[in-house]
Length: 344
Image (cartoon, rainbow, N blue to C red; front, side, top):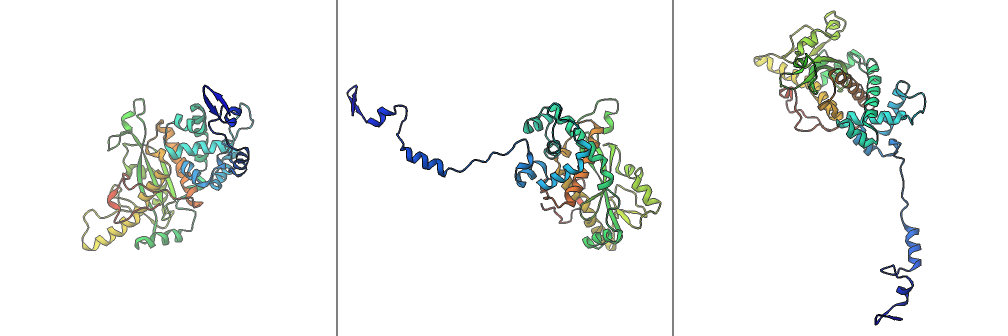
C-alpha cells in the first residue's frame, strides 16, 4: 500500500492506473475463447443473405435469383470489367429491388450503395431484357393444353368452356409533359396507363397489352388487341369472361345487367370465376409495389409493367413465396368478390 494525498491505494491500481476495475488476465483469456465467432458476409454479393432477407427485398429466393441471372445474363452482362462494372447478380438484384419496393431511384441507390444514374441504367437494361422474353413466359391461352385450362376454370364455380378471364387495371404514373397530358387522366382523375391482362385459373398472365393512356376505355383496348382478332377468327375453342364494360360476344361473355331468377346463378358463377383476374392484379401489385405509382414517362411505365408481368409468371411457375395482398387494396371491381379473399 502507498499513501497518496493521505489515502492508501491498492498495489493493483498503482500498477494499472487507467482501469476502473482490475480483471484477472486468465478471465480475459477464457472470455475470448468462448466468444462467438463473428461471420462477415460479402455485401457485394446479395445472395450471401438468407431467403427471408431476399424475399423481403427482392421477392425471389436465392435459387430464383440465380435462375434470373442465368436467364438474363447473356442480355445484360458487361463484356469487360472496366470502371468496376456491376456483375449480373448485382444488376438483377438492383432491378428487383426497384420493382419490389416502388421507391425513388435514389432510395434504391442508397440501399444498394450505388449512384442514382447507375440505378437508372441498370433498371432500364434489365427491364428491356425481361420485355424481350415476354413471348416466352406470356402466351395465350397458356402453355398447357386447352382442355386442362378449361377444367381448372370449371372447378372454381362450374362455369364451362372458359380459357381466360379478362380485365384492365390502371397503373398510376407521374403527370407526363406535352400536348397529350390530358389523355392520361382516367375516370378517377389521376394520370395512368390502362393495361389489359388475361389470366388463367392459376393466376398466370396469358396476355398483356400495355400501351394505352388511362382515358381509353377497356372495350376499345380489347377490340384493338391481337387476342380479340384471334378469337373472332375462331382460332381457339373457348370463351373469355369480362365485366359489363365489354360488349357481349360469342367468345367474350359478360354478366346480365338485370338478372332474373334463373340468371342469378349464371351471374354468380361468372363473378366467382372472373375474380381470378382481380386476384391476379392484387398479387402482381403486392409483389411488385412499383406498380402502385411509377414516376417515369408513359413509355417506360409500359415497359416496366410488361417486365413485372414476366417476373410474376416466373415467380408463379417457380412456386416462389406468395405475397400477402393488403385487406384495404383498392380493387378496380370490388363487386365481383362474393366472399372471396386472397391469402398470402
